[in-house]
Length: 133
Image 1 (tube, rainbow, N blue to C red):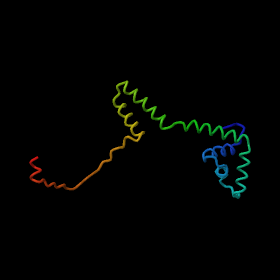
Image 2 (image 1 turned 45 degrees about the vertical axis):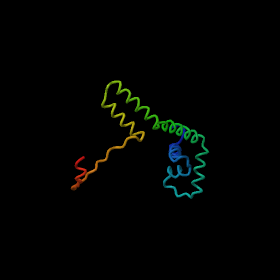
Image 3 (image 1 turned 180 degrees about the vertical axis):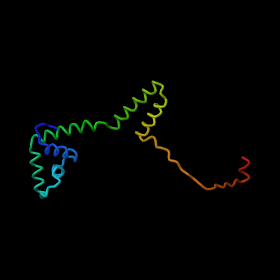
Image 4 (image 1 turned 60 degrees about the vertical axis):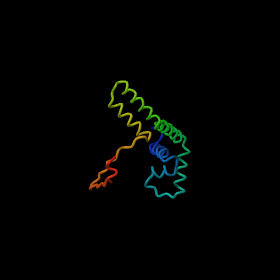
């Protein structure tokens, strides 16, 4: 948190980033007991957005969120491949198999088996011609 920004405006900045950039929603979230009209909320949110400290803090939070979002399926797959290769090099077959399964799941090439229970009696009629085969 920036030291020179009031806590309520810090919370506003956090809510603004969380909701994708809606200042009025951020204001409502930080002032849940407000009975103000929509126009008054919009004006109050606009005043918050006119505060340079709030804008700077929003940009800081957005940069942090962007860095966090860079953890993608691609980066997870790369990490998993490195783990698999390490397990293979160490001849750790159990972990090698496990990482292969995880990779297959991540890339949509593996689906857990689903057990199917059947009950009842199956009657087969074999034709005498088929029985000769």
